[in-house]
Length: 138
Image (tube, rainbow, N blue to C red; front, top):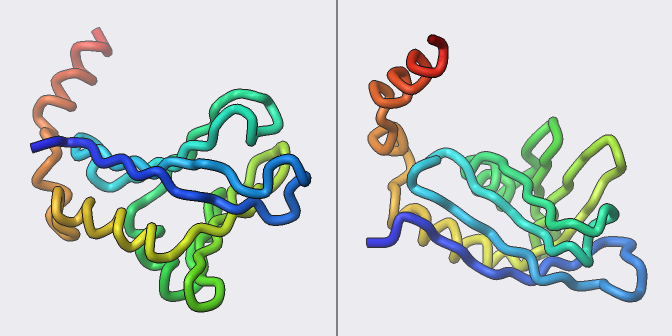
């Protein structure tokens, strides 16, 4: 069984330049980092002209489907019947994108099939991670 789930999604930039109102973003989940999801934006859609990846909690993404969530760099909230808003705050500015809620639900279901919610801790090898930290400290 695969340990990684990737789902291409169509993200609509709010107040984007006319050249790219919609961008092909990607949601990614890796069982080795069971609490996190990543959303990646291609280089042409970023101010710096390089691919940008945001990492945030799977729990935040799921909760944001039902109501406003987040108070830091990443915020998620529903928008109308079939859209979800993701806000990404950085020193350079804020990016706001809309994603179809159905795409997010499909992604979250696949992640839950791989690692059920509430059982993420079973994917962690804390003894190995602690040994690595100790090895690097010497």
